[in-house]
Image (cartoon, rainbow, N blue to C red):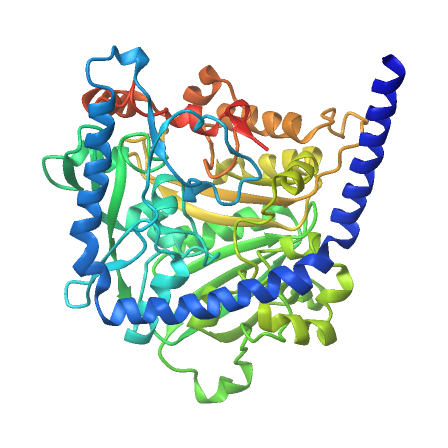
Length: 534
């Protein structure tokens, strides 16, 4: 018996070894010849369908019927649980994957056995009002879909996240940030109102000023644990056709921190966009931008169509600024600037394709089919492999702690490049609350890639030997400096640690008021790694 078990385990290990070899060395063949063409055709069809639905106002006509459908599902749940004690009731959840966690490798284990509410048809633009400068959308509308409607009319969102597949509902219920956050805050700060169906089936409109003001501030980052979001009203703004970008190489983290502070504190009105890409322990390039209506006649040679399919990926292009050593100014079409990181999924494409495919001749061929759609990877077995040796994390630290944070990320992860995105955080109540009491500048550090997992006894090197251990170390540091971990990623924190990072005062009160504590899993239950499956 032991002999048979040993043989089976040995065969299983060999199969897993070959599968891992295939995924990490030859998986790009599947992506190139099957996944990319299929996704390209799907995107081609969806773009045309979205245009038809927007022009015919299908979203506005059908929205009320869809909301009534959500209410009927909740009423049916009430009838099924009528007369049962609270603890014996089936809990509520959504039927599909939470769109705020599209970039996670894991999937929700906690949904098993729950009563599922279907929100998949909430995917249209409901209303666009250019005179009052707002747009109302359903939660499954993607950034790309909304921008395709706004940009031809000369409008855009104040905060446009860099990955077009991200959905509006996920950016509100999870988190959303972009290079314009230095001026306009997080994605939630562009929201004017939320339409939500509670666990009682009641439809509530929560606005910044009004009877449901507390719910308005409680919804962001709640991951749908306060009810079911059915529409979001967002600010829009006029969108000039070009952006003037300035690239400034920095050769130390101290220099970078000083320049960010100067750009934001002293020149806040001048810069619409601020971000930085960190290429190693010290070297980075700081990028700032402003809207312009027309390229000056003497500068027309500095126009850069960075979004063309054959152009180098943005992070590789910016890296050349370190080699040149001086600052540079150029002009980029606004539509191409918004998608500058999407083609290469920041730099995640390099973990899928061999380096050869990032070079010009082959990029000319496959560039037509990019970007890859989220979520990727799609199969559970591939996700399991990636999750053990890959990191997708966004951590937010005060600007004053940026140098120390970058040292820790270098020690624990050794992942480069890093995406640095500054933003202002106010002291408004909610899950993410500035506990310093003042309007403070934070920096989001985007960590995307494969960390070094070798054990080391050097004090300058990390003692953590798994991805989970490294993430837990970062989480501990965030609690010390009153920083935050974006909830679009899995959390390794236990309940006590999680609620030390986030402010539960308003959240717990809202959960009790709207009868969510026994009806819907909490935000901690949704992100805790042990409650999710790979």
